[in-house]
Image (cartoon, rainbow, N blue to C red; front, side, top):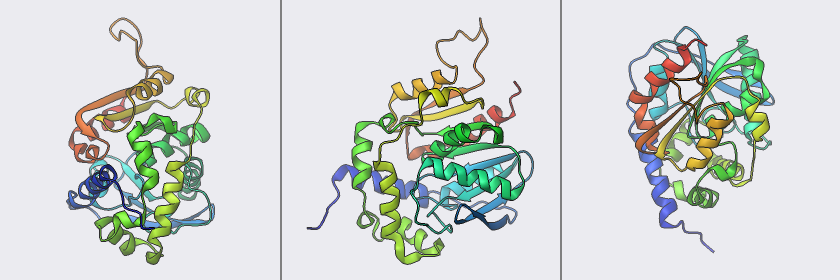
Amino acid sequence: MNWKPNMKTTAFVMTMLLTMFLAGVVSAQQKPTTGYAPVNGLKMYYEIHGSGEPVVVLHGAFMAISGDWNDWINELAKTRKVIAVEMQGHGRTADIDRDITAENLADDVSALLDHLKIPKADILGYSLGGGVAMQFAIRHPEKVRKVVSISAVIRLDGWVKEGREALPSLTAEVFKGSPMEAEYKRLSPTPDKFPDFIKHVVAMVAKPYDFGADKFKATKAPMFFIHGDADGVRFEHIAEMYRLKGGGNIHGDMQPRSASRLAILPDTTHVTLMNRRQTIIPMINDFLDAKP
């Protein structure tokens, strides 16, 4: 029986494709340092842009260092050393026979920092990458200074119902002939395995997960939670994450504030957050530069 995507799923995917792959305009930049790091059975592709304090940037699911995400990297690299990576199965990093989980991906980032001899860095991630960034703070607290999480959650039920129901039904057929499929085939060392790649990532997003509120609360690194007002994350979950990091219900003119921060952008979805870098990056720089 042939599967046909429903209208909501198709609309979501088309919006994602157009925004992430067609809206990006590659800006002039100094040629980055590139390489492959042998970490946990992977040959993880990375690029280093700019100079200054190190910040690791982690893409979202199905993405790579290309399109609009590349513009984010270039902008951040104006003032920092940006270590951009392509996580398991994404871009130029080949997939391996291992579950794609936030825990595994966070451990890969830790091993990459060891490989590059970087003892501590800020970690910034979008969507899947945001979850990995938060999991990194849980699993490798000694290696993280601050975390920026853009539209990510610490439990599967943090996403709204429609999102939880749409993503597990994605197949390679939805992306047939799309810029995303073309980009995978252009970059991947296994260009004929696009359907397997989609299945592997979908298996992750469909499986229930929970980072643990107690473990999350115990993290020491300040966190900046950035969301759109229609980004598919429940407001209650956003508030929960911020409260676990000491924020909310505080009159900041009368008592000390949390070192963590929260921003919710108006008229902004999970996908169109990628178009808001001119608003978001100055806020990120201010957060990362802030002294205790």
